[in-house]
Length: 116
Length: 113
Image (cartoon, rainbow over all chains, first blue to last red; front, side):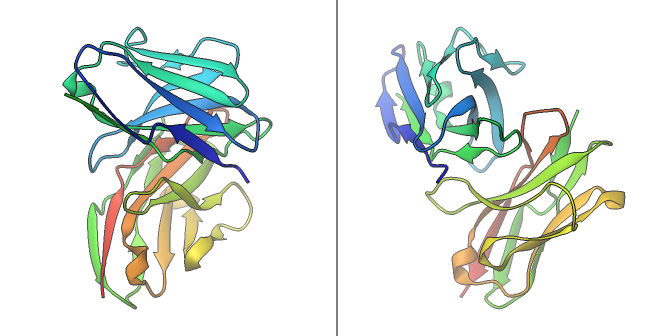
């Protein structure tokens, strides 16, 4: 149980285009999902917290107009990188927290974004 | 604010050696502590967690960790490592009342056959 999927696993896009990444909780309902960014050989940095049906909360320094997050249902959150640039190339990981379970997060496999 | 320090950036061991990876956190209140593992090319997996009770926590694959409140530490241990333990290990903390996980910088573990 507690499986989180991400799609796509890898994406290459041209500079200036937008890319959407999906995060789904497959066998549980997730009122809260988190989006992280991981640079090579570095730790995970929290970008934003999304709650179903409300606006995402962004961490300091994360541009909310560039990284659009939508948590439209209890099993799906999306991250859209708008007008992507090469410096946005990174590994994006989502996690989901099951309803009623405050401190446990289940992680997706990540999405490797390369902007050329 | 909560923070996590992992002082060992890269550890290289031979198979069957004993392992201890350090993790220290800074937060004076109640915390929940986690160790995650990321095998090459795979996603983060939970190794073990501490919420309350016995400070010695046993996880999957023979790993254990001990919460020492007075030292603000949650070190990961394994008595005899295997080549398959080669991975990146992350310590993480959530402070009581906070929903955000804070990760340490990670320790890369390389096991030599």
